Length: 535
Ligand code: MSP
Image (cartoon, rainbow, N blue to C red):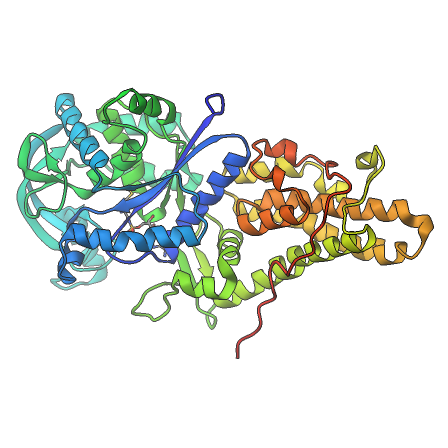
């Protein structure tokens, strides 16, 4: 393990005020695809997800259900772990901010902050949005009230829900002291925020000036207590952001934790939604600068899933009140788990907002999975079984060097695919693989193996054609595996190639010309049965 490079990737930790939804599942699948791809490409991966359990929002949700906050969190946590298991999420760790390790790390952070001189005690007098767990200044609120004509009512400039007035004693983090250092850091690390256009947003926010941040609360209890000021609990974001470091040993006793931290930190990727980039790209790096810890390599911000209105063609915000919210289970019921994963990764450009709809799900599933990929596997495996006595054809030495439409499509494929995968360009990476799948389907039509099979003089040619098709399938199964792991593993099993699953040199595995002859071929059921129109 030790000689493999470390690759540490995280999802945001989700609030336990409600059940997991399409947006949280989307982000988690996106990370899972990256984690699976990197494992196959030879990295020693740690993939972390978890739950953000403290704060006023969770406390209020618990109260509304007549439960203590801890009992509430415990009752909801399985909804997350269960759906992640269903969706084949391969996380290596699951953190909950109420765990002992997080309490220890946050208290350790407070001590380091105190030593650093970047915190001080004062009093906060301003606005707070509970659903967003965010502070707003008088000026931000006044500006937004004016722009939105809220007439005396003070609404959150971000989410539009009513704000609370907060006046309380508080500890502050001197965020204002970090403006220059942050700007210098962005200059030196232009790909810290991805995609690139989001960097401009972050930079102009910082250029506009930073205010010190209230990082402790005294008006409620549900949080981690300050080790040196017991009346105060930690502001939920100050607590939550640290989870990424906690999970790799920050603030934990023992040599093992220290070694883990040295190996894993800084993280390669925090993947987050565009609504929480300021926390990850401004506050979090400033916190790390204050305590002298390294800053993660990249924050990748994805867009929002919107529901496509079929009449206007426009994306609309998903919400229960509009009646257009789609639950993960609805999509699983329609597409199955692998169809679900494939659809979101294929149809939504990760940096942008995506307009999703049941119509598109139907189209993408049928076109790509049922008609193209599923059909190719079924036809090629059937023909191999039929013409070669239930086996893969035995090919003469040097067959792999002979050119065909398949070698053309497979040439340089891994490099193109990897270039896209490395930067979360999943639709483009899938396009590359689907080009090979499409070429293979055409090749069947052009080469007409059923005609070759009738002529014994064409036996070698038939073996060459079927062997090529199976080789294209083998390679495609490896490249699609991060998206649809179970069906790809099934394809390789049907070719008696389960031994290749879990190999960690994807480039070598995907080099053309390796399918062995004489392996048992199992035909099996359709991988992706066509969706029937329900009406
Ligand atoms: N607890 C914080 C994160 C702390 S990380 C140190 C939080 N939690 S959340 O549960 O409210 O949101 C988690 C993620 O879901 C965010 O990244 C957010 O962008 C994402 N999404 C919420 N709705 C979404 C869509 N409609 N589409 C895509 N993602 C969306 O914020």
